[in-house]
View 1 (cartoon, helix red, strand yellow):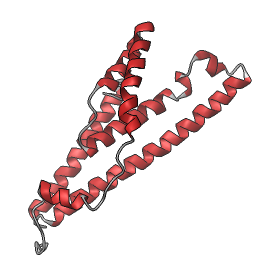
View 2: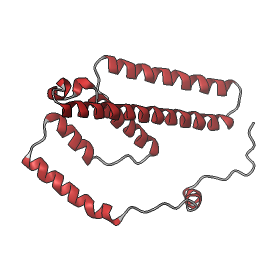
View 3: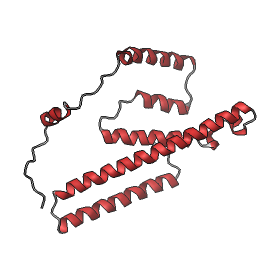
View 4: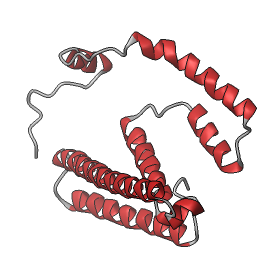
Length: 181
């Protein structure tokens, strides 16, 4: 059994004092000044050129509150990266670009391929990071659990839950579900 010597309760005041040791650079004043200007420009653009059905989804997404938890933020980043990769696939390019009838089209196609490769690499890193952190947290929790029948049962339940979630995702994808779904 793991020793509890030296452990303290993790309270908000404890976390505040811990993170005081790691100051961060505040956002530039330009951010708060430019945000309303950008929002105003976007609203003017939407009035002049009403969005299509697909663009309405993007507008709604941009108006949502950002995730509050790190894990939610990472999942949202993964979703966005997967959507970008999907859109950078050749079959989703405009028809003229797919034909590459001009040298400019060929250059743009190369840029799209390079971007897709960079986003795929980023997605792999993010997936790896999430997986390692999940494993680390689980192993930390397991150090405080009895290493008997109950510990084995918890480990088996976790593995079963992960398999079931993966099966749900696979079924959704095979039935034509979107990345957001």
